[in-house]
Image (cartoon, rainbow, N blue to C red; front, side, top):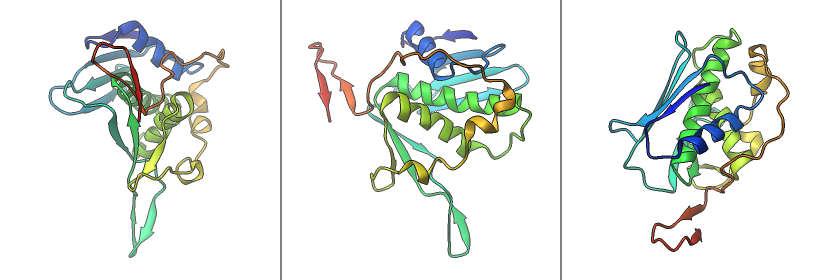
Length: 196
């Protein structure tokens, strides 16, 4: 993975976090660029032709940050389908960047596996949410703040869907940023950890 970070986040820690999240999956010839957003809270882009992933982080974000997702299973009401709201609460810029990276990385895996790339936003959000939930203790919640059971959002085997991309057995590694989303480090210099 060709990685470059131009934000104030620690580049080594950010790269380790990304690599841990996709351990076993291919990362060559990926080019990953993390940079400041020009105004939006965040954004991400996957450029298939050049194997580039852009992760853009807003300087103005306040943490914990509520990341709206398209993870919840679609519902039908009044003869129409809709996606119920769901969100993750992320504790810092590292987790926001991780979510964006894994989301865009799944787009890339779908293409690499020679699958149809259209209408995959929910699958990409679920793949990213799974990493934050399983490795970092985040909780996916509905619009009322209630935890969403896994059966309500993890509706398809996402790994099997992109198996043709070529996953290898990964050595078990502990995620470098193992911090629950509800923990926030204060900036008063005392080094205290506040739990909500």
